[in-house]
Amino acid sequence: MVLFEDMHDRDIEEFKRVCNRLMSMCFINKQNASTKSDYYFIIRHKTEFMQYLDVLGFSLDINEHYGAVQLVNREGYNHARLKLAESIILLILRVIYDEKKRELSLGDVVINIGDIQEKYISMRIRDKQIDKTTMSNTLQLFKRYNILELLDRDLTQEDARIVIYDSILMAVRVDDIKRVNELLDKYRKGAADENTEEGAPDKLAQISE
Image 1 (tube, one colour):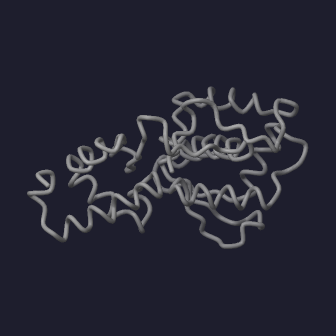
Image 2 (cartoon, rainbow, N blue to C red):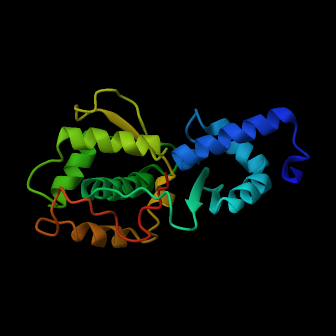
């Protein structure tokens, strides 16, 4: 193909691997040690990636300030439909990220399960904490999408640590944190059934799968 005429065979094989990884993860982060080399490979070959993915109906959103790359389907396909609890946890992670980032300025945002539960209760979204199974499954889901990293295996413990990657700013595209809190207000007690399959508000969660 003309698109790859200036690439070595080894780079073409790497291109295939990174493309498949991007499609399975949605986000590629410089922060994540396991995807850092993939991030720089995309930066070096962004023209080839953009042209190739454009044919498939995808756009590549590269934010070098965040050190993250996001794959977005322009036709609305391959978007993850989040359950209500997953949407709430994602929004809470975004709120906590913003608070911690203001405190730290530089460096990774590291929180724990207790931080999420405390924020959930303080916002009076429900009368009880998020159940451990829902919390664990949701965090594993967001790890798969490269929005966060889990530093401890046992997610039933409140002190289990989590790194929130800068890619959350692309997953939750809300510039004003007050708007995030407004969205959380809609999920307060009585707003919706916890078990519904309702997804996040339109254009809030830009996760593809």
